[in-house]
Image 1 (tube, one colour):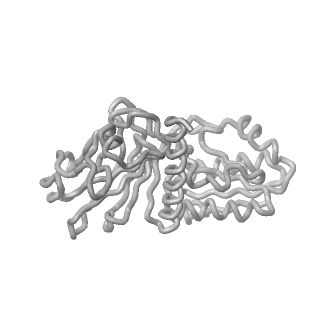
Image 2: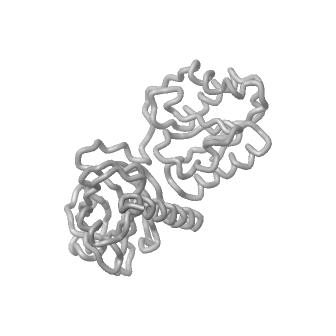
Length: 295
């Protein structure tokens, strides 16, 4: 075995162990997942020590781990909080830390993320990391000795030379045109089977209890029925749907399949469901989550 092949094998083993870690954290509700160059928004993050963030499809670039918050102490003290990093398949070592331009210490490869600047009532703290090769995912954990709530509102991994995706909590565009022909083509393999639709106003790119519920319901229904999973937004990660994406009984429809949208709201979802009902003669039921969608 030459040195190159040994490195490749060790990298695959590390990646496998990291994915097991991700699945374990996911089951405990301690994980948030989104694509690189997107921001993850939330109302508060009281228990910041227990939260992990996974950013997927990270291309080579100079990135900033960006944190928007309302904590004056964090703004004034760069060393009040720090972020540790794991890259898919990469060892935690002095050599890798140097390539990423990070420090290596008790918490692995890390950088301090306090300090920063203020804008529109929010503090913006950040620090940089150099991603030198395309990486399937980067795991980020925030650490602090601060006892009070840090009042973090947003976190993202943003590349210097790449465009920022819209926030994962942003609204869908106003212009909405459904391409009926594309929907018919998508449904053609299941047109002669009893079929059910599952829709929820839930992001398939964020790992939380709601998205896990959505994937689980589809998995259960698909045991005995054909199922159409109508997604709220285009896929940027397959972590949530990894157990159903290749099932013969599951057809996944996302906004890009029938429109120029990257996200739809409840009213637009209703229009798509009506279109499917119009072209599918054996649609037997629609399962929705949320009072607005159900009404």
